Image: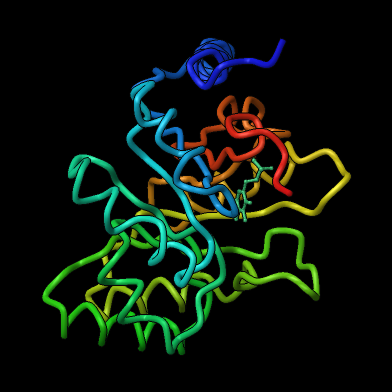
Length: 221
Ligand SMILES: *Cc1c(COP(=O)(O)O)cnc(C)c1O
């Protein structure tokens, strides 16, 4: 029998609680972001009914189609932008999202700073770090992080913390630990790390935000 949205959500909270215990942390320090990308509104509302209030989308245009009506109906929902963001979408992203997870370059700092000024809305941003130094991946190189943080502060962008997507198919724990160390070294607190396959490990190593799609919604078609 297929699990109900309620059960899947309970499972995720139980996993987070277990990982918190192992890492001597409080579950209050961890925000579960339900990543609803590609899933239609009919799949999202059961999770809202089950009590979930934080959601993540990776495309501005898709989110604009799905979320404004839901947000009007449920004003206590927080919507996070988790994917790579083009600078020309900065105004739209600032208008729609409560948090942005992939601030990864100075041109985007400039665009988001300007968009927030214009909108009179400060949206907290995680700075994405290319923690595996992979060529094809977004995120700033660890060495460029201090300059990017300074740039974001100068642009009055609230810094939520650091975010990463570790390389696929290898043990993620060392990368999570490295991101936690970088956050410490740079005086920022939030850590957006961990997805369906590895969020318990990420929580044990200090994640404050886990981005979980498949484990809550099933496979994306
Ligand atoms: C899709 C996505 C996720 C969720 O992935 P799952 O493996 O389905 O949990 C998390 N973070 C980012 C940046 C994503 O694009």
